[in-house]
Length: 289
Image (cartoon, helix red, strand yellow):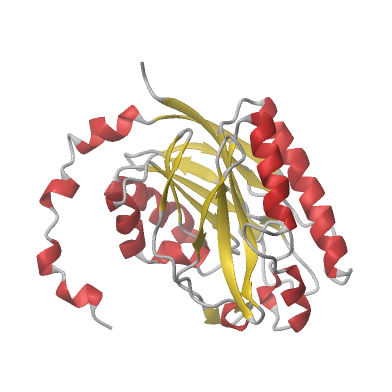
């Protein structure tokens, strides 16, 4: 029997004024995403990922302590509990990107992975943290991830996560492949301009180079008062040959759905023997500072 998994990606515009109280923004965005998760479940989705920092704006456009109020513990915080309830209700694996508090003053850009029975499997912390003009002041908010590149054994298969800026670093993509990942999600918040042409270049290339499925999620729309640019949506799935097989529009809320044939991974790997032919003993410079 073919191993077909129906997978989903959720992109969503900000539906609350960033000047509103943090708790109000969180609740409004959480409510919106719960509705979108219900829509995904209605379409038969078995595994789904939302955009980076899904329950708020992309607040890294400024350096403001107010946004520390969006942090919460994982898995003991309220959002993880909501995701666990939804996952269990719909028998759906959920990847939920959140703003994690480890201890007071130590915060991470994190994605929690919830299995289809509602159990918490673990988390990935964003490894590479940008800090650049204009509007990506992430080192003010996040400590670099320290949990490596975990691959989660879920009800639908082996799932990995890489977050936004991480996608520019091929080493982590390969680590996830070596860990057995079959589907890797990359929740992002990226705007038109400098990196847009890379959006459909790097991640299909990562899928082809590492021979697994990649789900790339980007938020859509513009977010004031910062207006650092248009978050250009276009969330998509790329298959193990690097071909885009399903895609969202540039603007607006969307649930992208694709049926992923996990048996295709073996077929392609038996043709392109990248894992057999790699020479890690020769790659000395890549592991030195």
